[in-house]
Figure 1 (cartoon, one colour):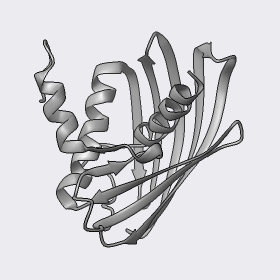
Figure 2 (tube, rainbow, N blue to C red):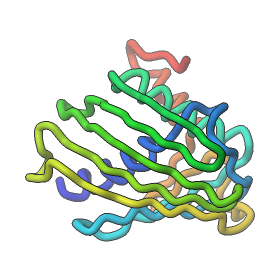
Figure 3 (cartoon, rainbow, N blue to C red):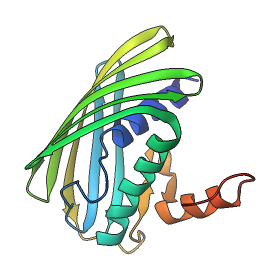
Figure 4 (cartoon, rainbow, N blue to C red):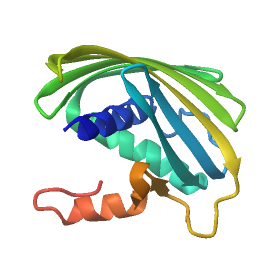
Length: 174
């Protein structure tokens, strides 16, 4: 249960910071390393292989999650800084986030996220995380654009997530 919560918190931090695809500064194509820091849990590092199309797909995926689960999503983009406030219901818990994303060109960004859980999860009602992302290199031969390499070696592709979602009864990938 703790690993599930840690992974969910890390993914929530990653996706809570996403803005509308057209508004977000583009990230450099290639391999990205994203590390989520939180004092209560060990760092969680993921790797993403991006090109221009899949960079937009990650933002669209996040936007779809917000559309389905979030009653509030306010965002302001000023140059290389993105401010976002959301209120979403995930698994019966209302998760309110406030985030500040600061881009350094197209090769790095830093995110500060404050989350509030109501009701609390695992005894925590508030959590602060930071996220540091940086371009590492071209994508390696074993990764293709859209691949997300999660902790414990689990690899998923953003295109596959959309396809699988569309196969579930009552869902469509729009």
